[in-house]
Image 1 (cartoon, rainbow, N blue to C red):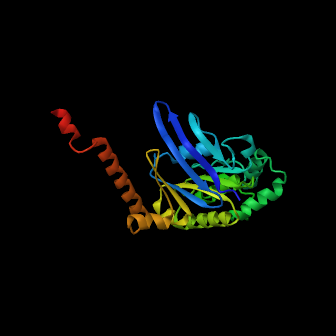
Image 2: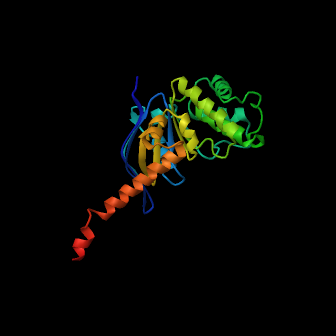
Image 3: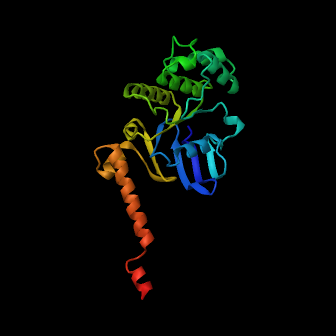
Length: 258
């Protein structure tokens, strides 16, 4: 069995005159739910776009399912759900899914669409226009669109953003089921309490990796009562270390002044 679904080495992404990610190294274990957590602007979406092969100005190595990220061979093996619902509001649920099945080259689209609808619990809504669905239902259609090609790796960019706690809970139950089937999920979020739903956590800030850990290790190492305060403790420790490094050895500035 494959050890890692994603292997990233020395990833650097430049946007305009700004370096968004610089020298990132990480692994995403196969068959697990890996949470990519961090505040808005930390580089989560940029990293996910690099994984699915749609990010410009990328250097370094991004290997996905033993192939180069973005390779044509990965088209049906990787499912990508963007932050905004990437479905057509003027089409029905089934019409959307048949379209995405065709893009993925699915040989039996009817069965694939039915299976995806069942996984996300949208039975009874197949002929409903997406524009008339609730926000939570629309998110489920986007997830179904990512699933219809039967991918081995699912890359989900903040799939629960804007959803109420009940809908968030239901979507995470779906993610756990998919993982139990052997799929790998890379799920980004800035909601820290979702960390406890993951097998492994990648904590990002300012385009860098603050920690690569598990939920239990995160709480144990920081002594914090919850994931949010644990993350803040790691940020404070990283900032303190950076400040010390910038200052240099004790007395450096004074000796220079003399």
